[in-house]
Image (cartoon, rainbow, N blue to C red; front, side):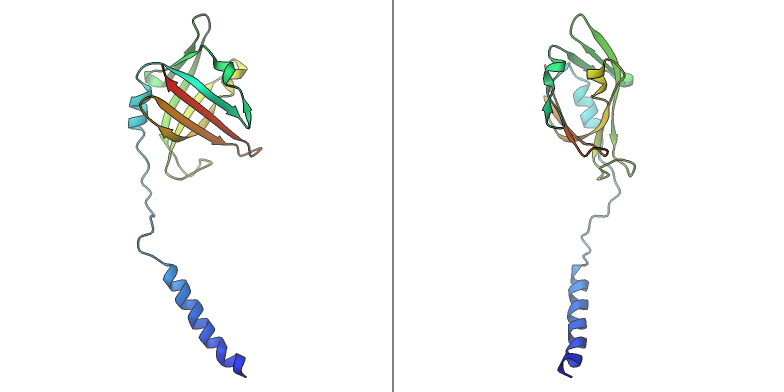
Length: 154
């Protein structure tokens, strides 16, 4: 009988606990991050890849000697003086179709050839950026691997 008297008290304590979890300071903002500062940063000068980690395998040497120019009209050019490869790039606000929809910025890279450069093709999440360094990450949806890509200004 004592247990039956205790049940209403436990229910009240539970309800008070649940009610205390609600907060008016929850951030439900749907505003997206502004890509303009990142775009303005990469549009200046040439960049080199100082890290490409493909799911735990360092492949930075595939891009040694290449300078990357992030031009207007989403033109991306990689050249080492004798070879030139054309690609595309953009910086966009993340959305619900993204693998990480947290109102962050996506650094989108697209190359079709050669295979080493095609590996860079993805919608990378920006980890950090400064006027001289951009660190990117991509968590693969298929195999669960994590890739890291870092560009540094020449």
